[in-house]
Length: 401
Ligand code: PLP
View (tube, rainbow, N blue to C red):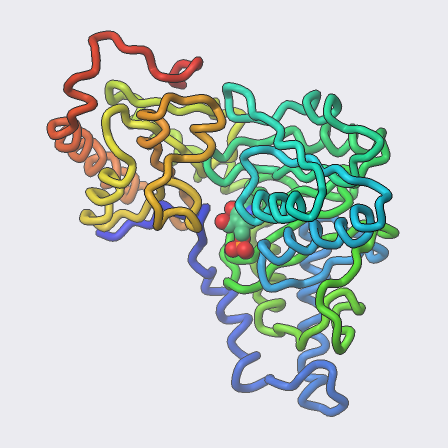
């Protein structure tokens, strides 16, 4: 059996999404900016897809949703534009992020530090969550931007974005959220939350890879990074990725339609898996279930290196993860576990299982059996587990949930 439980890294393309995209390769391939019938074949589908993307996040027609190549591009755009508009001009010199943002945010922030920008990396609490009050505490009159993700990709922890956005609005500071892991997992509506910029990526919600977007509130438009033919309202030049845009439109519509299924059926499967994992001795999950999206578990098995567990799972046909996909080629410990303050042993033992609406009950039964066997095998050959003192602490300040 092959079981894919790495949906926070990427997702299978919904077959309906694939079908909607297919005509835009061989049949309808005109450049939408050209002035002939080949071009006009694409106008209506493009417009409909953009409407679905706007509707999917509650954007108004006066706001801008700019299609990009991925969330990494959207996140980089925000930071580099803020640099051009505020930092280099000397108007402001400070940015706030959380210490558990995706590398596309952390690396952008570190790059701006090399150019003289000050960056505050906000801590997370013992449940793996950024507390809104910490944001308030660190904002100064020199703060140009606060950027906090909506949902953490490692733990599935939901951050208090409504509250944080409100604090930023009150203080007059621009607020960006990386909502990549939130779409299709919880309601995302910029008409009710004062978010200035929001990042999404189609391949995280059963759309194609290589297409994402940046939402910009009216009057908060950023300086473009790509200058050229003035596509996307002049905000991002480059010939439009018609198939990708059509795919993202269809995928976001399906993700919103599937929200109820996600928070009922997917949650039920996730909880069954989690209950079985936590029944095993010395296993821990940091963020409480009610503070997490429905599809994610980050679980630590004391005494078992994450990579060793992945190896056993992979041999049995199961795809899971030890950290963000971008970091999985080096054997670093899980960054969120480190940020929480887990001891070094435990930080190396975290495994992420992330489900999707395509995960089945049979798959979960199979995974439970494989994990149980792997835990016995790997603890049997683990020196750190064998020599751990009786009744050792969990290595965290929290108990398992
Ligand atoms: N932000 C978060 C929270 C993510 O989980 C990811 C993907 O792992 C990204 C950004 C980057 O997405 P993309 O692959 O579209 O650049």
